Image 1 (cartoon, rainbow, N blue to C red):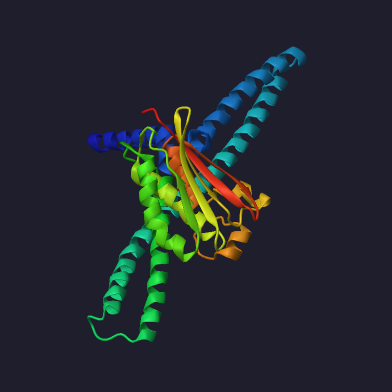
Image 2: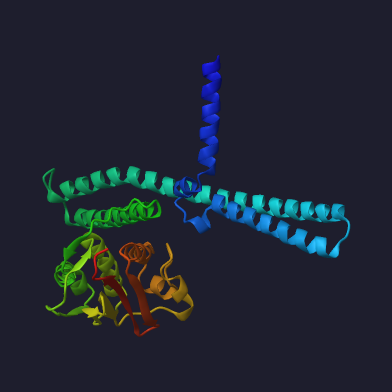
Length: 327
């Protein structure tokens, strides 16, 4: 019986300790300290203590009856405590809802990935003609199905990446590489898309640039997002200029297009999840609105900076920098 009681007491202490472990609680919700409900409650507790001490010092100086001073302090502390509980509970509910949302997106994305991949291979098998002759009209419909399947696959990949970013589980393997060579490979991959949109891509090469120490696969994803946007939002016959340069202790990548640009009212939202500006939706209906959010998150993880300049109907220039020094 004593053993059972000891285990119950130990479990109780463990539960209390886990609740008091603010860092662990913040990690549970994938939040910084200043966004964490438990940490905010602690700060509110300190504010209550300081307010009570200040009220006591002020009250004893101006109020003779100590009972009145004590009553004022209790009322103040009680009011502040109720406010602190309400605020922390509200933040906790929001944090829990955000965590559940991220988990839901991750689970659904993983579950959808396999059937979409199977559908892709099935479409390609049917289009190959190995299962029988395919008529021209049937091929057109298969192409439509394949294109929509690819769009769904890209969306699922973006959602999985966002889920990993928010849960701080996105792999980031640093190594030394040439941004110059990475850009060249990317441009070659995008030549068919640029040709389809009748857009010219110009790259100002600089072979004297030093190498960067970061994750090349993640940097390629960032540049893919920026180049893909530039191609799709540049009008027929337009031009895209890409440049990689050294600025102090950083490597700077910039991509300038002659596209539709970004309206002034939309600029502050441009790196938010799922946001797409109004003129972009009119010009190009495809897109999830996740590319720039993912890009900014990756550059932040690499300890770089990202930004843009844009004028509506004249074009945009997106850029990011990466530090040359190793951490």
